[in-house]
Length: 248
Ligand SMILES: O=C(O)CCC(=O)C(=O)O
Ligand SMILES: [Fe+2]
Image (cartoon, protein in one colour):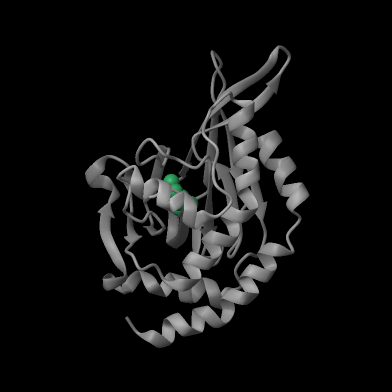
């Protein structure tokens, strides 16, 4: 790994964390509660997107490379970072977790689920490790013309955090065409509904990774959520995924 790449990214990290902290968290929480997703606009600036995307070429940073077509996941590829994770991934993920953990705990309570998540991300990772989930899940994804990502959930064991984050690293209309981020929600005994998230380079989408509580006329019910990406028509689309649980 070229150390200058990492230290450059670290210089910018404090700015990314500052942007994260100054986001409209009341609005984000309300959007998560009512729609199951929220957009954090401009979490990363253009230079940060560029540098994070460039890490894709550094094979030694990753534990696994996946060709999506081979697994029936769609078409395109992604790489899971290995431990030790680049520091800015750790810090961004830790800061996001601190903001999201109270929502996750409130959601579990509303859905009648016993599990509560600790306030610190390091403590949640320790719980994952004790449960045999020890492999890191942050990833970079790369799509070219014709590629897409089938609707899915990123669950890698019994322990799962109910929210996750995806950051778009390339600019729609400039670096790629198509490749819309899509969310589907399945209500009990109902047909699925989809949302297309209007993301621009540097925006982060926060989304329900598995299920979320929704208020119905007769109380709270569970909505099952999936996400995916429509076909990229031209160019290259890059994203970074931040999942808070480790994998088996
Ligand atoms: O490329 C995308 O927008 C989807 C990424 C994804 O599925 C994930 O980070 O879990
Ligand atoms: Fe995913």
